Image (cartoon, rainbow, N blue to C red; front, side):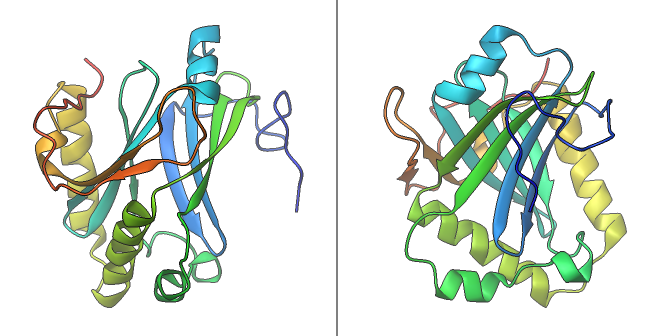
Length: 202
């Protein structure tokens, strides 16, 4: 396993990346990668140190992970169990059955302009949120994968984000860290968060 540190290339030999947010769940690991061109000091500090919020949204069996760090713009990423090659696919049922604490997510902020890792942080999602996530991923393994419906769902949600639509009405689970405290995120059990607004890039 390659050891990676801030200041090192995120992917050896790769010097440019697409600006996007990627959530990946493979056997034994969860990673959130934020690729941003020339992130500012404020963006780096927000990802590294400030309040982290994670929310889940489901469309057409595709799970969307909405994230915010500090006062930065909300970001959307998507996950479907079938996307990864078979050798990399996890066992969500086993992970759910053996889950006794929240999922630990490695958060990586990468400079898309040069491929360098600018910030690295581990956050532990709440137990309730982790169960909700694994429940939905397990459901994905049961149903046949339709790549066209998956692509349509991704395009629709990203289009809503791009137009600044409020996504919170569709969120079914959310957890957040308290600013200045540990990176163990607290869960919100209610299914509606109408008093909070999640919007995408204007």
